[in-house]
Image (cartoon, rainbow, N blue to C red):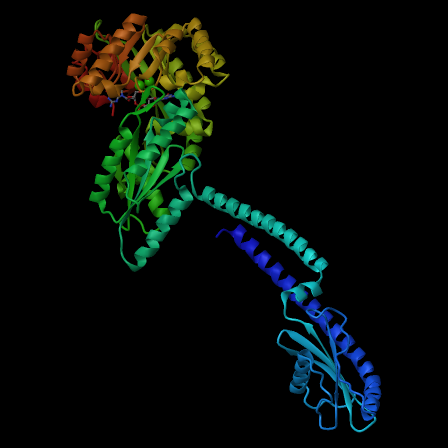
Length: 637
Ligand code: C2E
Ligand code: CA
Ligand code: CA
């Protein structure tokens, strides 16, 4: 029974009880008052009749006849006058059954009435009222007796009065409405409270538990384990390349993708396990009663599930997940430490490219406090911790170095080298990317102006982040630095990732057109990992495509990757766009690329990125591909 109905019933019951109770009191009061009045009347009659009747009786007349009634025989209130002698016997009883009954009842209930007495009693369904008075002569006594029906419901209602009943019902009606209204109010409040409670503990998009509920569940497991030892695994899952989907295909598609992933995760877990969404593209799991081997088996399946293509709006999307695992109780016995360690492990999985990582203390290098790093990065830009390394771009056909890509390095005074994707992401989040990019451009342009003075003709590639494209000062900074360093825009290639290009396409297009008109070459980096379409490519002033190294390095083992590489090379030829294959690590791959008609390559096989001085030396000693690989690999690490 819901609250509304319960309250209504309570109100109705209370109103009815009140109505009955007060009605009864009113009725009772009225009844007592009327009985009192009537017996008083009878007493006054009795006094006079007693003397008259005794005088007549002594004179020989007969008495004791029922008095004329004031109503009809059935319902009327007849008044009986009974004259008794000194023995208490009725004198001259008339031959009338009603009178005899009345006499019997009187004898039964009032066996010895005294002079001047009166009263009432109840017999059967009637209330009897009597009044008795002694005559002055020879001990005669006159008693009046009359009756009323009492116990019938009729009389109750009659006495209560229609007004009272009507009033009662009106009251009841109002009470019911009031009750319904208040009950409705309570119910709504209750619903609202439930919704709020649910919202506080669940993620709005997926309906999965949120971080707060996850913490709570983990805390419960830890508490229970104090009594009965148990094992559990806390796993953090971070989706890779989700941001690209969001940026290039829009948030609606991103949301659908997240929903699909959350469905897959839920579908593959036991009821006792928990899956939560704890951030944009971050999920967390609690696997109960598992050891590391079982956890690994479950997670491997889950990762496969995540990696299966998601078909949304006629697009096949590929995402993958990096999973970090902390085991309870081995890796921590508090929620906080387990969370922190699962995060460290997840971060390590992401960095190392392995899909699943279990926490171990040597992964702690990955758990650098990002806030502290942000602060340190600010210092690094201002100070001397940043350095540019250059990785050569090599022309297979001409067998010569045609350019180099500037890649930023940050050697942290305590933590040592920090991977560029890590600190670039921090810079983007902390609003430091403009300063960082300016630093790179300044350094690279001035290095190149020195090369130019030495007579070297090499093209310089620099990487721009998607955030740089939103920066209104980017163009002026570029032009200023070019003129400061005295190099031409046509010597510079600006590398932009595929997703950065398609993000905010119309605005980006105008910017790219202006930059292209100034002479810059525009290159689409990590090609194949984003979601740019051919139409986009054709509409933009693109000079170069760099095939992502994941396809290139996998070509030997995966014919599908090989055909993607080949198709991209063909596409480049068809559109008149240079194609660079990244991540070439072996002669075999180089040969295959050559056979596909690829002209330009970059990769460890030619050389790893090198500090400027070493790069200059290397340029001086470099010989055709294959022979340079050995010494160069030792140069850069
Ligand atoms: P990217 O632009 O795709 O750079 C190529 C990355 O692949 C470099 O990693 C390079 O060292 C690595 N690489 C090159 N050849 C091979 C190979 O044969 N095998 C393997 N396994 N790797 C190879 P790095 O230097 O760690 O940079 C990573 C990413 O960080 C870059 O990817 C780029 O997106 C970003 N980045 C680096 N420097 C800058 C910068 O100055 N500005 C911006 N916005 N991003 C930068
Ligand atoms: Ca690049
Ligand atoms: Ca790349």
